[in-house]
Length: 353
Ligand code: KG4
Ligand code: ZN
Image (tube, rainbow, N blue to C red; front, side, top):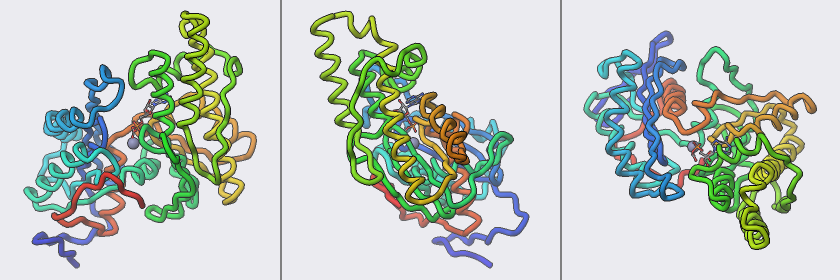
């Protein structure tokens, strides 16, 4: 049996066929390419863009340019590391969205051209679904969650609680109404004079601080939604007030301030997650996205696992932050279902599912 995808005839997956997917991720400021053999990652190369550090945040125009510079070397490196020749590839998977339009266009155009040139199928991937389906990468220390489960996706661009009933059956139960949780970390860090991205630095300083030293209010947000912009403003006013009285306030209290901010953010996330568990009765939790690297949230989720008998899944760090391996696993799952994209597909900056 064959699927028709423009002028390319694509064989339906044979039962024991080995599938090689080259995947490309370029939604924000990481250019990444990976090669998967079925659900196993053979290579996962990430070129992070340092250029944004001096601007205190991602500059979209610079991000697109850096993707254009990086994409060919990153793809070549991924193929070389995997020891796979382009001719062996079964399909090309790419991030269609959500993300920065200029960044997405680079990966999308590259993937389309390569698939066309090689005469193989093209597979479009939703970046947020990929953060969730990263849990299905086959690796020694990883055990995939059982359906249904709740995914807490926390990154620099998103904060969502999703009910996952099957690979492609997902329902957003709640999400941020303003800033993403990663932005809350990064913007708080900026207020404290820490470089971008400040999330990991808040985490590091928080290790030596007292989480109860300073009290920041927990916002009252309806249902399973989140809001972080009020917290950012509270932190800004708190710092301005204290620095006025003592110019060395930040320096003298950095660890305690970071620990208190982190404690507040983790409390906000955990309250909503607990509410989602109570509402759905689902106790299998999978976290993903860059902020799931945070030691506070990891600890809180693991404590809840002990206390409430949750089943908790946290992927290795490399599959938490933006990476092409997670795009590749979606590529593999879609390939098996024959879910291929047409050559006239376009990038989608806002891409809900
Ligand atoms: O998923 P990701 O790599 O990119 C996006 O899709 O946004 O997430 C990046 C975000 C940044 O905001 C970064 O500060 C945050 O994840 N982050 C952390 C930690 N590691 C990364 N935030 C708090 N604690 C960390 N350890
Ligand atoms: Zn992401």
